[in-house]
Amino acid sequence: MTKQPIIYEGQDKNPEMCRVLLTHEIMCSRCCDKKSCGNRNETPSDPVIIDRFFLKFFLKCNQNCLKNAGNPRDMRRFQVVISTTVNVDGHVLAVSDNMFVHNNSKHGRRARRLDPSEAATPCIKAISPSEGWTTGGATVIIIGDNFFDGLQVVFGTMLVWSELITPHAIRVQTPPRHIPGVVEVTLSYKSKQFCKGAPGRFVYTALNEPTIDYGFQRLQKVIPRHPGDPERLPKEVLLKRAADLVEALYGMPHNNQEIILKRAADLTEALYSVPRSHNQLPSLTGSSAHSGMMGVNSFSSQLAVNISEATQADQGYSRNSNSVSPRGYVPSSTPQQSNYNTITSTMNGYGAAGMTNLGVPGSPSFLNGSTANSPYAIKQKSAFAPVVRPQTSPPPTCTSTNGSSLQAMAGLIVPPM
Image 1 (cartoon, helix red, strand yellow):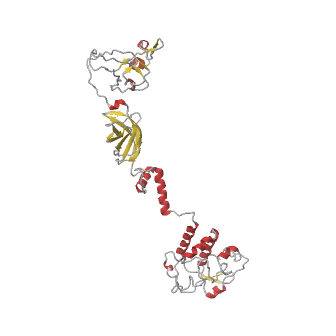
Image 2 (cartoon, one colour):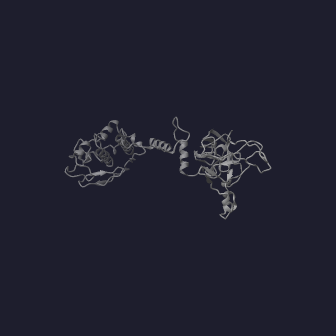
Image 3 (cartoon, helix red, strand yellow):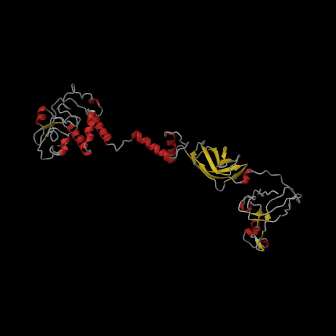
């Protein structure tokens, strides 16, 4: 003896009516309207307990359970089963006695093949990816349960081609859509739709929308790929690789003091066309950060002043060693000053002695003199170098408190004394 469950075959839109056996209150219009009904007492919806171990149900069959019209001629009998699952072959809570079912209809019904969709209802759990362009054509995986061959996917109202991978995954191509927005994704089999109550959702995005997703789509196309990368990189990986790429192209390491000082020296050289040998970099980095910055500042201040004659260079601008220069230089007697000069009057004044640590020659023709025989004439062609124009008339002089005069070089700003 085989046991086969009777499946509802009707087309009723009311979910309460989509059952094979119905109680009186479901079928009665007066009971549905909460009106008085005499049959409610005769055929109650709740089971009646008999002798503590038996239950009596009052149910009505909602469809034709027989194949032929009229009285049944076969030995087929029916039972009502109380179970926690749809499967009737396993453990059940209660089973009724055999029942004889009579068919009052004069019309028989055709033999009906078992649809795969009736075994278990397919449902959608997730969609990956859940967003794409309005142009369509993107590969999307539908994840869910109870998928079978022949099941189709519907985006909104558009039926799309689908490929069954496993009973839990279907691969589809997204159809195009004229406007961006959210569409419901459902399943269909032979004009029968599933997941209408809990459909999946797919977000269409326009190509010209300045959204965050659009930015990630652009990064997806230009970010370098590594072996073993998935087809669609996570957003966190995209941001990390984009940041690494920008730092590699434009970033400057802030923890390397030697590189910072080297770039500062390169910038100064480009601005003032001062040649710098490679052995000068350790002298800058060997001292503290404060002394390194003092070296650059004093170096640029020396460039802003031009000595007029060699006699003035010999005379110098020596000041009292006990006082601080108006330019803010520390007197040569202090320990900070000993790193920058070899003669006591070179830093506080503007003497002709060379600054050995910075590689600045002591000749007064360093910037003012003729560049025909100077080894620095090549550097003057830099786009960042100051332009030295030939002077047709004596340059103006600025007088200091001790009577010495300084010449201002064309193209450079002379700081106030």
